[in-house]
Length: 255
Ligand SMILES: O=C[C@H](O)COP(=O)(O)O
Image 1 (tube, helix red, strand yellow):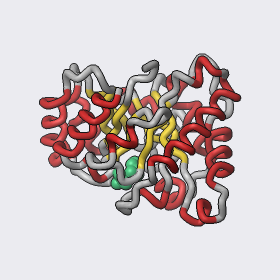
Image 2 (spheres, rainbow, N blue to C red):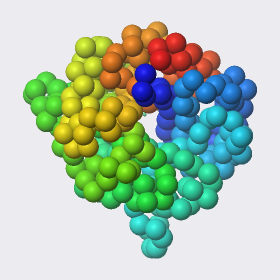
Image 3 (cartoon, rainbow, N blue to C red):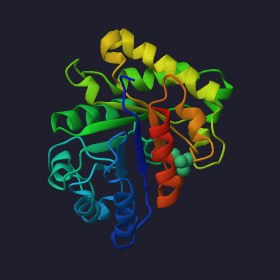
């Protein structure tokens, strides 16, 4: 398989730095030498330094959950790419649906972050996905197309393989309602097709497209076996080492 599977844990607004440490230690102890799967943990900003020190030297990579696109300046409460790099983050989640819906992030705004992250050698995980209303209205593919096209504007052929896309149907996030494998694969294949149009077949085949939305050890093997599902962006099941490790194992078995 040309694409190595990637399992990313998005801890969202959970875990103080004190609470994050044992979780990171358990993950490193059990999977820190695993090279079959790329593993990323995305703790809140306040736990980045603590978790970064724990994962340092292991195969577990550090990711942030957001960043600002400007290099520095009067942006109270914001964090720049350089600040993340300084804490040894190598990935950053961008455009998560919770950022889009609660904080009004638009595709154009997210695009500025995508290009800024790449300029700073951070790998963006660009999150896309439709709401339930959009799915019911039959506009899923159209919505995802715009999110991908605008999100990637200005990203060059040289940079695109550092980008990861995460397809997360909003109605499946934290709800226990996972997309069927057919629903997920349909959108993943569509995104791959879109990437092929934008970047050509050879590059599109190298880009990882993760599934997110109630992925759990029980449903992961079937999802990860789909041709265009290259890993998972995990919320709830990433907050506990046992389930996160089971997902890593599922990805290793699916490769
Ligand atoms: O970023 C992760 C996703 O929002 C998935 O969350 P979930 O696994 O809790 O549904």
